[in-house]
Amino acid sequence: MDIVARAKGLIMRPAEEWRIIAAEPADTKGLFTGYAMPVSAIPAVAGFIGAALFAGMLGGALGVQIGVLALLLHAIAGYVLGLAGVWIWGKIIEALAPRFGGVADEATAMKLAVYSPTAAWLAGGFAILPPLAILGIFGLYSLYIFWKGVPVVLRLPADKVLPFTATVIVVGIAVNIVVGMFAALFLRF
Image (cartoon, rainbow, N blue to C red):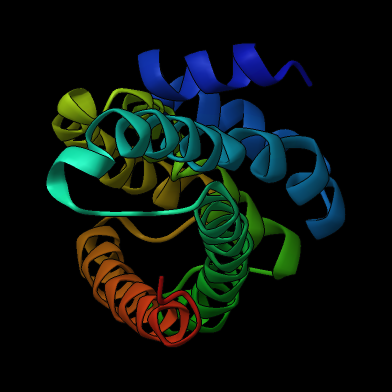
């Protein structure tokens, strides 16, 4: 699988790309090492570079001193916790899909969890220049990508797609809040 082609497919033609993904054999390890780990590194690396550059340019003027090591640790922790959040989200999808009439095993659920955040991860690249970070809002397109993948990958009945999508998004937001709170406990500058 070509990572660039997969990301482009999910952004440009998600319904078609999900049909390809649904037909592919997959396992959790391969999904994470072959796609999630490299693509989710984009916002972590961009955020680190952007914060390091801006802390250097504005840090003294604003009276804020943030060390490069602290920024690096923050980026690494955010990256690792983000991957953990994706795995947890996959487990939630796996648990909820049958309750909505869908079919999900671990690999199928992880396909949705791993590929859906593509737009958010790519939009995270804007963090390299903090004034452009607001463009990260384009990452919300990941919700649409997820919605387009649900009926194809999980084979949910059409009338269950919206309730399932809404439920998983709400639970996903809750997971992100918990992961964020956990991270905040350990990532104080």
